[in-house]
Length: 226
Image (spheres, helix red, strand yellow):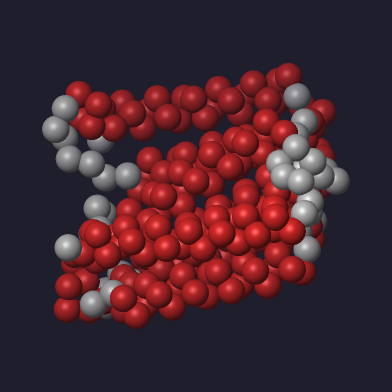
């Protein structure tokens, strides 16, 4: 899997983005109204859905530009992003679609789709599994370990769900994990020859998109508070 790699510049960029995101939410959450802030349909949950949806779409886009083991890996990550998206999604049952999304049938169908994709790859592309596993357990996959550690930290604070502080930390760590996956997917797309021309204009566009994404997330947060 030579077409997926991450540089030290990306590491610095990811650290700055995650730190900024964490600081923003830590300072913007009002402990006095924490039940509203951390509600499943609250501001942080809304931003998490944006990050997950964006990450899944970018992983699918990356899969379209790749082949072989790289494509298999990106499809798996996109499917994982969708699973997390529907796990985080909470909607009111106001019609047949929303009722279905909140039903056990949806969870069963979701599991069947994931299983079908996984079994299909195992049967018809078994030769690629070794390459994927070697990448997963290599140093090159370090950004995915960062996202995993952040998600694990969120799960730990979920277990310690007693205090308001732990609730806030749980949601922030989950948000950081999903944001990390979003930028990882974006970086993979950016690396591919068909994704963008290597020029100052392309680099500038990447910065503009990054800033716009964060501003949009902040706007959604403020909108949800109103």
